[in-house]
Length: 298
Image 1 (tube, rainbow, N blue to C red):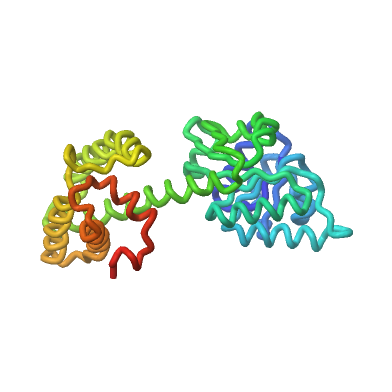
Image 2 (cartoon, rainbow, N blue to C red):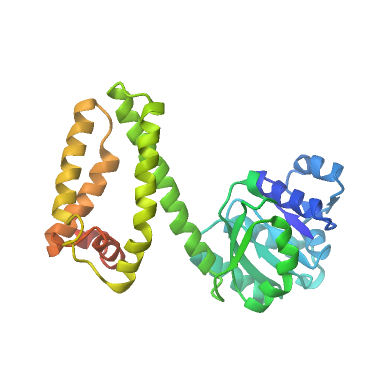
């Protein structure tokens, strides 16, 4: 097993392979980051080419697709005749789906087998049952290396042959996570201005989060079925009114309101487009088919 890239996640990946008994080679631009892993038995490669040559499977986990490309460029520069060793490159670097597809195409041209993957859990979870990794690329390739990748723990899901599919899930889910966390911090900031400690708000916020989780399957089913009626839920006109008073309250408290104002502008644009009696589900369709300029925002 080879791991290229020894940031916190890369080190966790390599440690999991070592803990599972896999002979593991590591490489990173900064050798110091490998010290602890070498103390646990990892072999050090002198460069990217040596790292690729060391194992049947190479996991790369660096900052973005450009950094993966730089690793391949350096390996090519080191290779005689510009040929890379036949190995499977498992790219666990987080980036967008188009860049994942481009990287997969380049890897194939260089003679590498390629799987793309997205890690949906923090580094501390790697090697435990809490791990969740989404993969995409050739199904046969995933099946061939499933046993080795199982050392990372938890759940490994193959989403399909499109090498950009795992990255598509990754971007959508991280967008959900970080906008949710940002929204939560925004709410804590407003509550603090009203003299409400975060600890007192937290249990109520937790109940609200559970409500969203409970609603999620039904909302997804409505989106897929194209059911947009607001007759049995809040219509967008009602959502717009609610966002109006929230923005007003934020401004009164001196808390920046741009985050919520942006949501209000989106809802108002959908109402102006004739969707006022539809449910909030309409927003997914509206965002997905309308260019920003056509939505009348700004």
